[in-house]
Image (cartoon, rainbow, N blue to C red; front, side):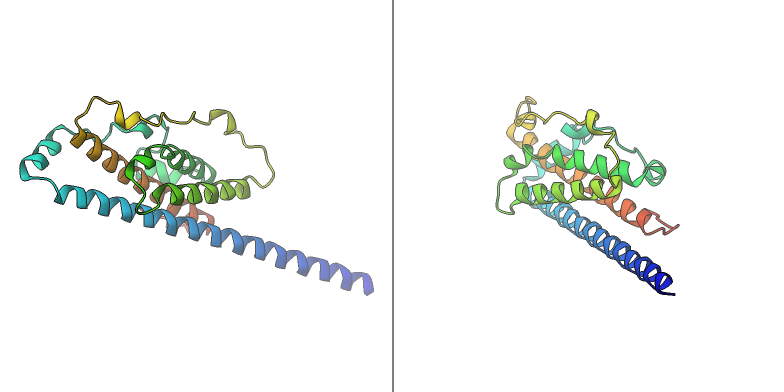
Length: 200
């Protein structure tokens, strides 16, 4: 009877530890989603404020000449649509999110620092790294060898664009990438909750 009681105690304790670990992981996921939501909203406000400061002719000019797809992060392999995103594994979505955040490590400094964007990106990068380690659960990270080199600090400054186009491209690409990361983290978080309805 004593041994059964000890065994039962061990089982109960392991369940509580497992639940605690799951709860902490969920908290980290929720925190990451909230942080990238804030960055996405910040990016949307920045580009909206920028557009409002332009003259009508300047707005028309930018709407004609700016190819939104031409961003520093375009070299990062990522899902191209809703179906592909929903079929991607949690780990893959986390890795892509990490790389997208990493690609803004230097360009974010050009955005200025009134909103501490560089610091917020760094915090989110650390959080996603912790989530990746939690998903690996001690397994080797097979994605390490595919890590991208750090992007050139002056990528958005050496495109031969006018000052107006450089500023708009930088803001538009930042908004685009934060939207991607928000989408990927939301789907990954939903996937972990075993919810079968992780629609976008």
